[in-house]
Image (cartoon, rainbow, N blue to C red; front, side, top):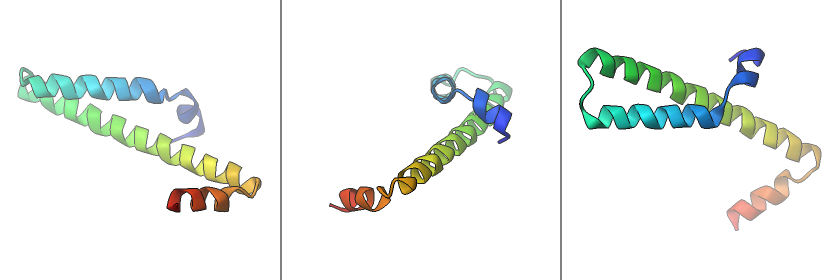
Length: 79
């Protein structure tokens, strides 16, 4: 994902769109062609969301390691 695309990515909107696609597919009233399009869009949204989450996790790790707090966070998760 390019920097420009990443900056314009709206995680919450992508999740909402994904939920709408899932609902439409679960209703079972889409044609085969529309179902395939919805599935393809859902896969794209899922990958974009996973990338955004991964980037956010890396940023959190980077920020906490700069403060030396990473070890404290790891200990809290284990306990």
